[in-house]
Length: 265
Image (tube, rainbow, N blue to C red):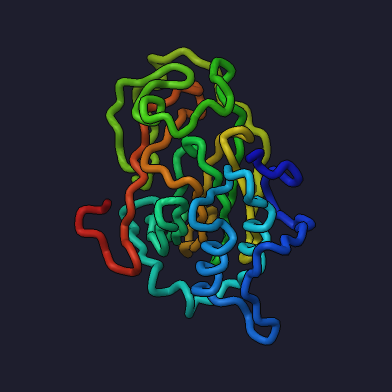
């Protein structure tokens, strides 16, 4: 399925087409709970669906994420911070292998590396605090949108020029590379920079570009809700000043269902 094009990313207020064949449970008298949101996503995607399936309306999933209003009572149990890391990935629901819904808990003043999404659709909703998204064009020598579910690509074959740096957890604090000066490449070009506030929703896919998420507040953490479909375990990270892609960043879980993963997987 072609990703939604209007808007590609930022504050999504999309006109949704009604689908008579899907009955999403909504109670107009009560706000949508996180548990009900999970049920509605399962029902909308179906037993064999992801956003790439022909029978799925991507805008319907975006609308569902918009309709959920952040309530810390819903998500506190899934939100586990580790301030030794840039952020933690806390799995809420594995979508029967078709999607992952998770809480990302962002440390003060930290950021993700610039990364792709391995062909997955990413929908992000801010739950608490503010986050800044910086979106980048693909390096000029890349095959745009070719970062997909192919295992070879996801495990280190660069879309531009590769590095010998070993895979690391993508949630580790971003460090400046000491080898950047040894690699001659062009800086990544910025497409846009967006400040996202509570209950705002954003969308990205590899066909749109790369991005980095950062917590601009040095005094408080931030919390966001992410839906990835299909799920992925490895993605590519990129150096901003050279465009060099690194071997895959491992996308591990810090907790599952509110329970800490002892092996961070």
